[in-house]
Every structure is written in C-alpha cells, then in structure tokens.
Amino acid sequence: MIILDSGAVTPDCLVFDVDGVLIESHESYQEVIRLIVEQEWEKSGFTADGRGYSPGLNSVLKNHGAFNDDYDIAWTLLNIAAASGREKLSEALPPPETLENLISGCGSDCVTWLPTRYKDKYDRARIRRLGQELYTGTENSPGEWTLDRAMLGAHWSELPLPAYIYTGRDIREWRLAQKVLKWDDFPDERTVHVDMGIKKPSPEGLEYLCRAFGHEQPVFFGDTMSDLMSSKAFGKGWFAAIGDMLRGARMRFPDIETALSQTLDWKPQNA
Image (tube, rainbow, N blue to C red; front, side):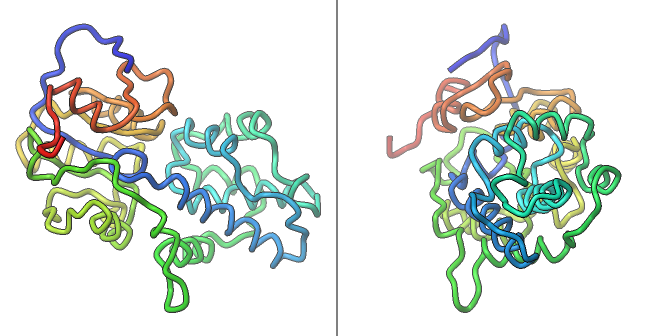
C-alpha cells in the first residue's frame, strides 16, 4: 500500500468501478481485444502473424483517460494498424512506446479523436457488436466473461458504508458481473453504467450518485486513468487506486479488500 495523503479518509459512501476492482477481468477483456484485432485483420485479407494485443499495449492505453472502453480499444488499434500500410499484424501494430506517442494528442474521447488522425476503415458499431458477442457469449459459445472472478468476497450489504457502482460496462455486462459477485440483488438505482449515457472520464457518474442519495464525500475505488480523471473532475472525496496500473495515485492498494481494510478498518465477515 502507498498513502501519500495526509489526514484521515472519512467518506460517507463507497463508489466502485467494476473491472479490476470488484471483478478480475483482465484476462477476459484482453482476450476479447486480441480476438477482435486478429479476426478482423484476417477478414481484411491481411496476415495475423502476431498477437493482436499485449500487456504492454494495455498498460499504455489504460494509463490514458480516453481508452476506458475495451471495444473502442480494439477499434482504435485496428485503424492505427491499417494506417501503417503493413500486411503483417506483427509489423502493423505499434510497440507500446510508439503507441504512447501516437495517442498523446488524444483528449478524453477517442471516438471523436481517431477520425481526425486516421482513416476510419473499421466500422465502430460492428466492432462493438463483435466484442459484445465475444464477451457475453452466443448460443454456440459461453463467452469470455466465464474467465472472470470476484475480487471481493463480501456481499454489498455487509460493507460499512452505502455502496454504489460507476462502471464502463453496459447493463448486460453489469448483470454478468453481478452473477460473478453474487450481487444479483444490488439495487439498479445505485448503479451508473454506459447505457445511461454517462461515460468515464466524466465526473457525471459521481455527481449523479451523490446528488440522488445525498452524499458529499465519496471514496471512489478505480484502477485506470479514466477513473482517476473522473474523481479529480468531481473534486470532492477521495480516490483509491486498486492494483499497480496507476503508480502516480496518491492512495494505492494491491486489492479491494486491502483498500477497505486499511482505509476504513473493515474486514469481510468470513475473514
């Protein structure tokens, strides 16, 4: 754990991101991105001779606030690769340090930025549909979500403060996360998801939840730059980074149970 802030953390509610915080989904979503990029590259008549995604590329993208959506990551990478003029995927995809340079001028919205820099060869809506099918499953495949596991063993009702969700998932994907967490009874009104028209790194999700339920000082648990940017833009409460992605975060913890224990002196009932 790293805590650089001075003073006590005294929130009046808990707001959780889902992926990388409550759900270990790195394997499933990175596999979805890899499959999309490789399959679409082959369909375009090119050679998918290398992996369509890597931990290095993931680290670069997740440390940039505009790339919270994994399906948009696949769409972005495909269009960047197409612009290279290379046939082999191993040569068309940039290495992490080059990608970091390429996206440095992107603001907080990759969807509006990408067409200003690259020819939009791959249809975003179709790429998103493919990603959703790969993750949530079809009649012939259970979906990559079956690789996910819960990172918090407690039921939401056991938590020491009122709990809320601010996720980049849509409602169908959130329902799958509820199954993994065994939080099927989590109230819908306490959840902000992208089907509500609210996307990170906007502070709107935090504003909506605090306004609706009368809170002033949330602690927001997240794992990517878009989460940190959302919290900073909100301007109140605390941000607690989970995992090792955000090395510059002022509070950082290896996992959510450690974060809850060390900030609120709380442990699961079955611990």
